[in-house]
Every structure is written in C-alpha cells, then in structure tokens.
Length: 545
Image (cartoon, rainbow, N blue to C red; front, side, top):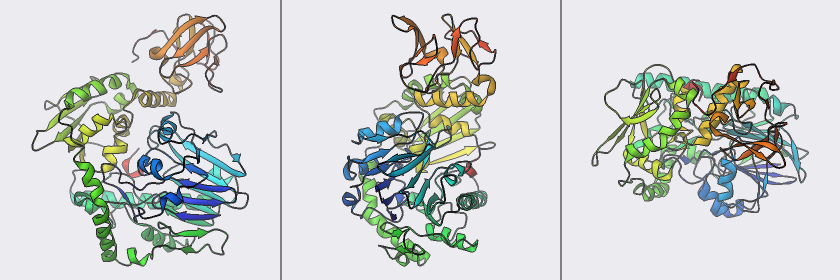
C-alpha cells in the first residue's frame, strides 16, 4: 500500500484493490481566507483524479471543494459515503456529477471488490457541519486509518479490526479561537498557547491509543495569504500560534519518544511495504521549513501566485440591493420559533454589526428569548460579533445555511463575550435550515431521558414525539390519513417519510420503525409521559474545538 500526500487532508491511497482519493482541496476557502499549505495547486490533478474511490469526510470547505471535484475528479469513481443524518453531503456530491455510492452503516466493515472499508460517522450537532467521519481501509495486507478532523471519544472500533500500519490524523488548528476575540494581546496569547497544547496532546492521545506503525500529521495547517490575515501564519516564532506546521509537530513528537511520524507534503510518497517507510518528497522540505525566513519567502511567493484568485472574487461579495435586516428576520425568525433547546441554551441576545464605511453599518439583534430578529437598540448582550456588511450580504444571497462553514472559519470577524464559551450560539449559526435545526433540536431532546421517551397523542394514536428518521418534532410535522392498503398512515412532512400506525412499520425505508399504539394502550419502550398538544408549541469549550 502506497500513500501520496496531496496537501492538507488529501491523500491518494494505492491499494491492492484500487485507488482511494480523500478530501481533495485546492481552491481558497472561507471568503478566500484559507489556502492549503504547502501549495498543492501545481500537482497534476487530472492524472490524480483518475481514481477508483473517492472519500469526502465532511462538508467543511477545506475538505469539500466542489470546483475541484467537478473539474478534475473522475465521475466514474465510487463515492465512499458516511452515514450522516441528512443527505446534504450526498446531494452536494451528486451536484458535482458523482452517481455511484457505497454507503455502509457506521462502524460496520464492508468489502467492495476486495477492498475492506469501515467508516465511522460522528453525528452530534457539534461534529463538523452536522457530521464528521473517519475512513479505515484494508487491502488484506495493510491497514490505514484516515481520521482527518474527526474527534471520536476513543478509537476502539478501529483497534478491534487489527494493527494499523498508517494513521493520518489532524494536529493543527481548525478554528477561529482565540484570534478573533477583542481581548488584550497577553490574554489571547495565553489562550492560544493553551489551545495549541491541547490540540497537540489530543493528537498524541489518539496516536498512542491506536499504536499505528506510522503516523502522518495531516488536515492542516492552512495558510493565510490576505494581508489582513497574514499574522495568523506560524512564521513569527510565536508558541501561542494555533496553526503550527507539520515539521513543528513532528519535532514535538520526537521529543516525546515517538519516531513513527512521517512528513507528507504535496507529492510526497510513502510505501508501507518498504522497511521503515521512508518519505520520498517531490518538494525539498528545506525549501519551505529551513528557517522562519525561508517559510516567509515561500509564503510570499505563494501569495503572488494565488491571491489574485481571491481578488477576482472579492467584488462579487457585496449585494447592495439586499435589505439585510429584513432578509435575516424573514430567514431566522421561523427557525428561532422552533429552536427550543438552542434558545434556552443561549438565553439572551446576540448582537451582530455588519460594517460598511461607505454604505453604513447594519446593527442587528438576534433575540433568543423573544425569538425574533430586530434592529439593535442598545440592549445589553453577552455575545457580540462584528464583520463586514459585504460578507453577510453574500451569505444571504447564497442562502448559506452554515455560517461556521463560511464566515466564522474565515476569521474575518471579531467577537466579544461575557462569560464562558456557549456552544449553542455557534450551533444555531451552523443550523440555518429547518432540516438541520430540527435534527439538532431532536438530538438535544434525546440526551434527556424523559424527552427521549416522551409520547404525544395525535388523532387517536399515541407515539414517540420525535420522527425516527431525522428527529423532527411530530407535533409540528405529522399528518395522519387513512389509506386503503395500510390503514392509518403517518407522514412526517419534513421529508415525506411514512409509517403504518397499526404496527409502526416504516413504509419509506428499512430500520426506522415508529413507537406507536392506539390511544389508551401503552406505547412500546415509552415512559408514561404524555404530551396532549395536537400541533402546538412545547415549552464544550473553544479550547477543545
């Protein structure tokens, strides 16, 4: 088995039973803030793209690059698809032209034309954009785990499959904390140092738990070519920088007695069959990492080549024809009305100031108590964000449902908060669609034992409150009608899935039965908590992110 580095989290894995390409990212992401480092744009992507299998771990734009997928990756490739709660990743890949998918159940090994694969999907609202995943591969001789950004609580599901030869794992920052916070420099430096130590320690914990023969630090770091973000690059000897490069981490590993680390640059090749698996580099590492000055010169040359790509896009971001406040009120208000757990978690207002020196600022309050969006009028808030008006106009124009996967990861904003980190604020901004929001709300409800077992009464039937498909609230989305063949059938109008109420059988898919019974009879597996309202309303830290 041979592994070729392609930049960031992208690798080409050549096995005895076909080639696998992971997370090909080349184009600037997050309002042109992030670029792969080192530069991978000069690889022969047309040749690389002639692969048997494609794995895209999740929808973050430093892993899912639609322009690259459309232009350079063969549509004959079979997509290895994680089992996510929504179809967003599959839909996005189909829009790119892919038509063949293998979608195993999470943590269930399957064999495809001799290649054994297992995908572990993480699906809490805090995992990536409602999902992150790892890919395990075996060709009968070698085993590789591509963990990329995923952060499972443990790796036992992979250890049980046998010794791992190659482990690809994230080590560098993939967050906006603490750089964007309006804090004294000394406070940000202390927070950055703690963040860097935690991400290094977390990666080491994974490495020691899995015990792979060879380790490949991947999925980072990005580099920042825009002058306003240039200071985020790790070229200033600042140990609080959260974006250290591969060489820094490999040195840190060796200091702790680990010499199994291997450096993958774009074009680097490691053959697991060779004794000690030496790297063969297409780029001389010394030409990038010899000194801080060398790395700075490399980045400046890359800036000259690639920053014009961002400059060409920048003019398109402003949309002066949009009424920002009215658009956000129309978009967010229905979501706020359904966001019971998230609203309770935020328990206050979030102020957003969209700045424009020429056209004027737009100052907005998102009130999670009143469940409304209105002009800010001097209210006290615990959470405040500032960004450019053009950025939010572009988000509105695109109807971008995940601001974490666009604005926040761009680092093109500033933040203030009173008190600790509140994950519910950021979860709301990554769930700006009815589908995502209902999934997140259902997920939080299921963490509460009484809510997980809660029953409702609808049209003479008692049933679980949350749809077995994607946890939509059936008090809001259920309709029941009598049919000639199946009798009473419930339809969840969120996605159109159907259940026969006589036995709870799902008529749309396998394995999603509904707990239900005629009113007055016990519902299987439910606690005697009854919600009678027919259609009405019912009442982590950033260091680890």
